[in-house]
Image 1 (cartoon, one colour):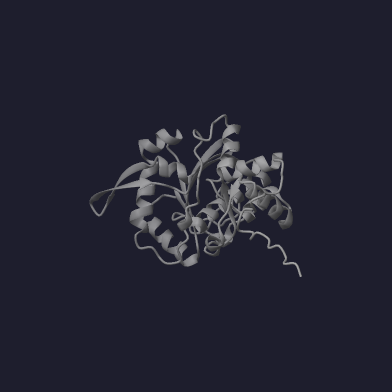
Image 2 (tube, rainbow, N blue to C red):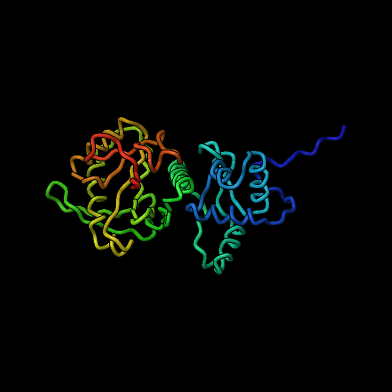
Length: 290
């Protein structure tokens, strides 16, 4: 009996990839992977571009086999919650060319930050929820999104007081975005918290420097305004309560908003009372519309 020809494992590229022609949707997928700070999960790409799993899996496999996208090997996949994708050089050449840049001029993420894939997926989910919420409510527009990588490349340093000492800290939020509503623009700095244990240093390392940052000239120069709010998304009610106590201690005057992952969805993120502030007894919506 003739021995059956073994198929290439799905975690490896074939030496003879199937022929494909890039479609407009393929180009939008490559652009989105880059725009979402260089990495998207399978569920996030499906959410953006497909209506079913099988079609999404087939097209992403084609983009992977033809070296437009990278994905983890089998061992890497075991350590992360879902399949993820990032640009290969060939994909970066395509996205760079759409911006009139050569691949040498184009700044792109060449590999995920493996130590925080869960965190980066959570940031992307928040952004997708916010984008979808703004489509649901046409009175609110998402005008700007600056990803975390920009703040790591060009951080602002803030000086603040703690127990009669001067401390210095680089400010690196997980994202910055601006919402445009009738007669107003609101600026937000995002902090995605994945810990399940109370963090005794959150007052010193997050609340105080975050509060000081909004008042600095560096913030004004970067964002063109002297107003802003911090959004903290955390894992559960106990940790949220601890964060809220630290905000009360710092007297943040409503500049810090706190909620949990389970309460976030496109239908709630803007107008449902899921956000807690230290200056309010009851949770409030993120955006009030007259």
